[in-house]
Image 1: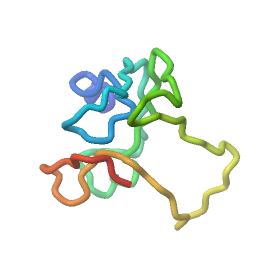
Image 2: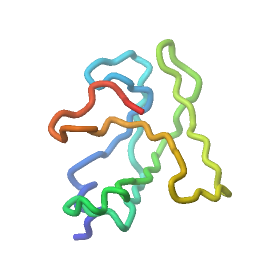
Image 3: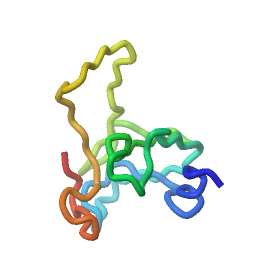
Image 4: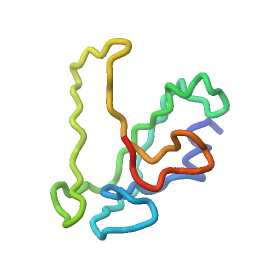
Length: 111
C-alpha cells in the first residue's frame, strides 16, 4: 500500500467549503465528495524535514456554488499558472492545521 492510499483510506472522503468555525455551523457550508487527491511526493508524515511538502491537491465530484450564503460566501482561489515564484517569496496560507500544539487543532480558520 502506498503512503497516499493509506491516508485516504482512513481519512477525508469529503470537503467542506465555507466553514470558518470548526464546532459551529452557519448553514452556508457546502459539502462535496472527494474524486481524486494527490499528495506531494516529497511529503512523509514521519519525517519533520518533509513538512515543507505538506500539501495535497483535492478534486471534488460536484461543483461548489460561489457567492451564495448569508454568513459565508465561498470563492475560488486565484492561481497564476505562469507565475515564477522564487525562494523566500511571501505567500498566504489558510487552514485548520495546528500552529503550536498538534493535539489542539484550531477552532477558527487561521491565515
